[in-house]
Image 1 (spheres, helix red, strand yellow):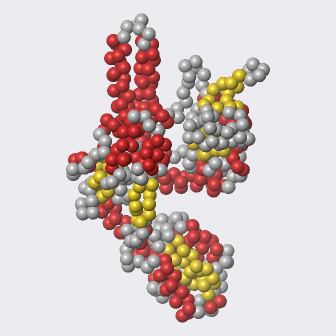
Image 2 (spheres, helix red, strand yellow; image 1 turned 180 degrees about the horizontal axis):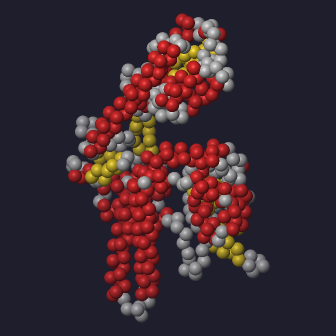
Image 3 (cartoon, one colour; image 1 turned 90 degrees about the vertical axis):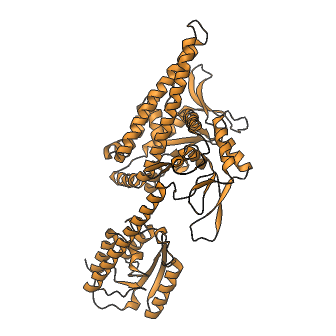
Length: 525
């Protein structure tokens, strides 16, 4: 229902001063947030406007529902907390038609009782709203035109072997040409690849880099006068050892270019080293359920960590014998420095707590809507990860196929009576199974690249997974429990009191936060 549209005494209105600046406004002609606030304060003083709150935001207005401060402002106006908005320019309020239309509708219905701009005169009548709508359209056109120009520039630079964003570790961009050149960290990052190839752990490589003061100084943006120190962390190292850039393939968005064919690029490694490191990383981190020689499957292998010593090595899974002579599944911390009261933890403590936790995991269509938005926003980033993973898996498959050729020749030279024959044959069979698994994974990744929608679960799949997880976990066999846990969880830790804490996978981690599900101290999100 429209509110009263009789003449308004502006001095009685409660104005919210809204100032916004985002990375799309890097041009020197765009006012800073401080400048916007100062100019608006001067206007408020001249026109005797009652500013009751100042709101600041550093987000783009190009897409709707991207600015929490702005969204809360509109909600507060609808709930009669504020009456009007004071802003430097209409394009600070919106550069998309959805939110532009909402603002004009709130003016039509009297929910927003007035708008004041430092740069434009606004009258709350038909002509004023028509001009406001035109300014919103111009703002949208400016934003889209700027994006197209930036995108064309980025694409052109990429074709020439120049990328956007921070330079790769071990390299800097030449100030004149924009091409990648080795920097002071080059030899240290190169040595990290050699260490990884020889079997060194990520922690050992990170320590080597720290000992040699591997870091770089980076400005937050091109106009910043202050640089900050950036060190290498485990997540950074993981990306380094998955990046084909280091042998010459530069990837960006949905494109790739071979730098070796464009200019005298100096690769840090050759492709064979890259393939070998992918194989080593894959063998270390495989999460596919494995069976022991005796055919006994142990669930959650590599997922359970000690919460007392916080070791990066997973607890060892196996069977222990009780005093009564029966066997039970357990997880044991083998860290000699660990101060656990009891080194082994019965799987029962983990399973029972997980059943209870999953009982609370009840999602509705509202959570599915949030999940869909999460996936849509994640798609571009996800495609980059999929492409990187696809390249890694192809390199790994090539490496495994080379191993298979080598082992086949070795097996052919061994007689069946040889003591080594059975071991080599078994190793060859395992290699063949891994190659088959890799080919299946490659086909799946290629399908996702062709159709990004395949990344997202359907509504029924999502709700069925979330709402029946507890029942499936209780009723499932060991391998089913394991597969379900790996869909929902990254890992879990267990403390001295035998209480697990969970590290959830995305998007479940974000959804649990948004839903504010109370999982007590056990929620590791």
